[in-house]
Image 1 (cartoon, rainbow, N blue to C red):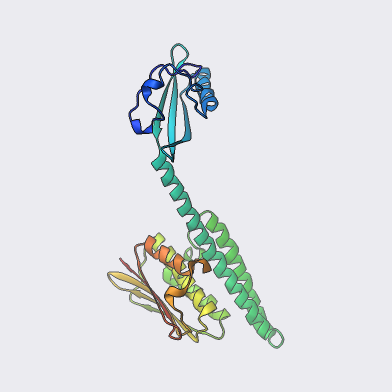
Image 2 (image 1 turned 135 degrees about the horizontal axis):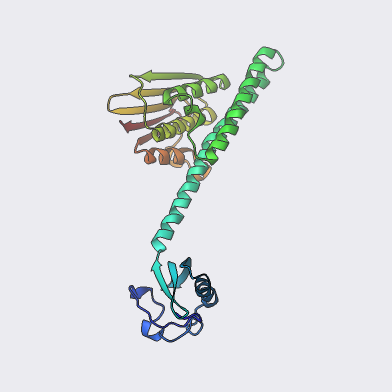
Length: 301
């Protein structure tokens, strides 16, 4: 092309990406070809010629009824001319959009899993403190201390979610110690429910990503049991076998119909399913109205 945007030569490597045949473009300017972006493209050409530097730009056009993205390199050559080389990057742009959406969903789950759990615990502690406020100042102070700890944990987790780091509960140990601490915190708040925490087999470490997602699944399952099950007993069990690991959260509460819970009610079951899929684990959700609920996650090691 010339500095005025007149096409001197053209080669179509992929003819389906043409707006019109190459032979009809030779000798015409961008404006004569009726390009909506003619002024913008002419500015690119003049910038490349002015700086004598190769310029790379991206833009989109509608071809054959669909939006097509191009990456274009504009290289200055002799006699106030440039070589304009474009390639189709639509697939790359679509992959980027999918990646961004997945990252947004992941961050939404992280924020939900950290803040929702922390503030649920705070509300439970406030309720417990209110019950003993008038007749047991020592017990009230204990609940208030736990509220402070949960609030600090929630604040820290919110910051960590933004920078996509591991859950704080895993920073000071492995999965079994993190879940033990979580059960201990929950036990102090859920005074009407008996919580059991059991470990079977010799404890071993799992990959960081696996432990992080297993912790979040266990956290969600435990919180759901406390909030919705009206259970007398909740049992959290870790089974360390030689060739597989199993996390089980079971309650004797009111249960529910697994297929009757809409995804719009929150991340909950959907989030657990996505996390299990991400680490290649098998997730089983067993529940019937009046028969309690059992969440089982199994992953090979």
